[in-house]
Amino acid sequence: MDRSAEDLMRELAPQVLGALVRRYGVFDACEDAVQEALLAAALQWPAEGTPDNPRGWLVTVASRKLVDQVRSEQARRRREDRIALGTPQAELLSHAADAEPGTDRDDSLALLLLCCHPALSDPSRIALTLRAVGGLTTAQIAAAFLVPEATMAQRISRAKQTIKDSGIPLRMPEEAGPADQADQAGRAERLDAVLHVLYLIFNEGYTATGGADLTAPALSAEAIRLTRLLRRLLPDDGEVAGLLALMLLTDARRPARTGPGGDLVPLAEQDRGQWDRRLVAEGIDLISRTLPRGRVGPYQLQAAIAAVHAEAEHVDATDWPQILVLYGLLERIAPNPMVTLNRVVAVAMVHGPAAGLDLLATLESDKRLARHHRLLATRAHLLELLGEHDAAADAYRDAARHTTSAPERRHLASRAARLVPERN
Image 1 (cartoon, rainbow, N blue to C red):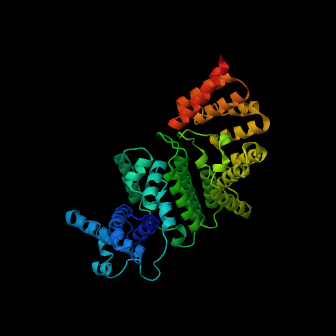
Image 2 (cartoon, rainbow, N blue to C red):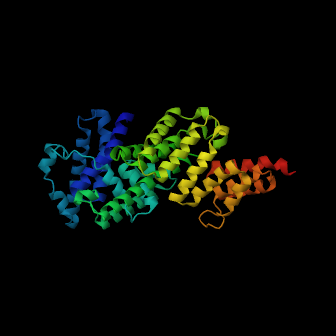
Image 3 (tube, rainbow, N blue to C red):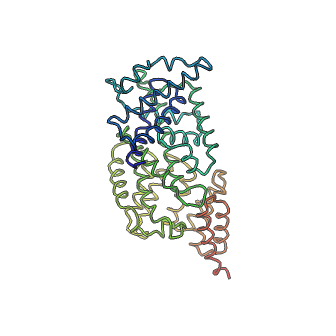
C-alpha cells in the first residue's frame, strides 16, 4: 500500500474511533469495527483511489460494520439493540455518518484519555493506545514488544473489557457542564497518565528492554507522532511541549548510538556530527519557547537537560554545573531514584567521582534500584574514573548479568574486558 495512504489511515484512525464511540458509546465494539474499516480501506484505496472524504468513508464503513455486528449478535442473543437502532440503515447508505453540520470534530484527546483509564495497568494502556489511537495492528504491537500475538491480543481484549465495564463515556470533563475542581483534577491526572504512557512507548523504542537490537525505531517514531498529535490538541500545555521536546532531542542522537555492528556507543563517545541537527534545532526551539511561559514540570526539565547536552559541540564542552542544577530541580519536583541516579553522574562530573560514589551509596538501600543494571554500570564507571580497575571490572560484569538487553550486555562485558589487562 502507498505510504501516504497508510499514513492517512493512521492519522484518521483515532478520529474515526472517537466519532463512533461518542455516537454509540460501546468502546470495544466500535474499536473492532474501526479495525475492519481500516482493513477495507487498505484493500480498496490502492485499487480505487482515496475517496474525497476519507474520514467520512471510514466512519460510514465502520458504522455499517458495527451495525452488522450488533444485528448478528441480536439474532443470537437479542441484546445491545440500542446501538443498531441509533442509526437507520437508510441513513448509513445515504451519506457519511460524520457529514452532518457540527459533527466534524476531533475526539482524539478524549480517546487518549479513555485509553489511559485509571483501572488499566501501564502495559495495557500502552497496548490500547497503540492500537486505538496509533492504528497499529495487534501483530505489530506484539512484535514491537517481543511477545506472542495471542498474548498481546488477550491484553488488549482485557483492557477493552475493563473500559466497557467502567461505563465511562467518551467525553471531556468540561463537556458535562462547568468543570468543578474534582473534574479538573481528574482530567489533569488522566493527562499525566497519557504523558507517562507516551514517555514509556518512546523509551522502549529508544532503548529496548529485551531482544537483540538496542532500539525499536518504529516505537519511538510512533511516540513522537502521537505526542505531536497531543500537542496539536493541547497547544498551550507546557508539559506536552516539554515531552515532545525531550523526545526530539533524545531521538536526534539515535544515528550515533550504535556502531557498525549494532553495539552501543555511550553518549560521551558518540560522534555528534551524526546527530540529527533538524531534530536538535526543533527540540531546542520548542523548549526555549516553553520554559519561560509558566509553571515548569518534570518533562520540561528533562528536555532542558537534553538541550544542554545537545548544545555542546563535544563532550568536554558540556555545561555540567547547569545540568547539575537542573537535576536538583527535577529531583525536588519529581523525586525518583532514577532521577537521583542521573544526578549522581552530574555530581561526579562537577565534584569528582568520589562525590558521585558517596551519593550513589544512598541509592543502594532503595529496592527499586539496588540491583538495577544502570546503578551497577554507574558504579563501575565511577570506580574506573578513580582508577579502581578491579572493582570496576567486577561491577561492569555484575551490570551485564542484570540487563535484559543484548547490546547493553555486550557493551558492559566489553568494558570489563578492557580493564582485564590492568588487573594483571
